[in-house]
Length: 112
Image 1 (cartoon, rainbow, N blue to C red):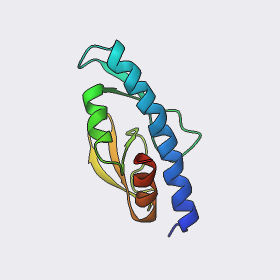
Image 2 (cartoon, one colour):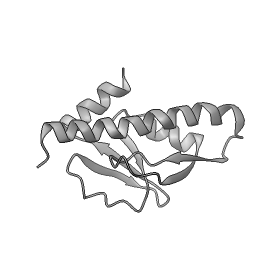
Image 3 (cartoon, one colour):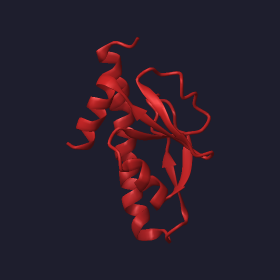
């Protein structure tokens, strides 16, 4: 089981990727036609990950609808981190939910 400090670090790492993606989504909403794909960053907790996940603005908005949900590249093992659980495998991407203390931190960061 991960320590509270580890859970917090993982949630904060994912939140930073989510912040970057919010900027991408904002820019894309002005430049990209509805339904066109935009390259978003994988929002996993690995700070060295720079996988690109192409989504429509609508798909990304759905992931962002829940402050505990994060976008992950489908190549990531959803069971590798006990601080999150798989919400849905969409084939081209995964929706993961932060749970426990990590979920609290992610929700707090999203509402900050």
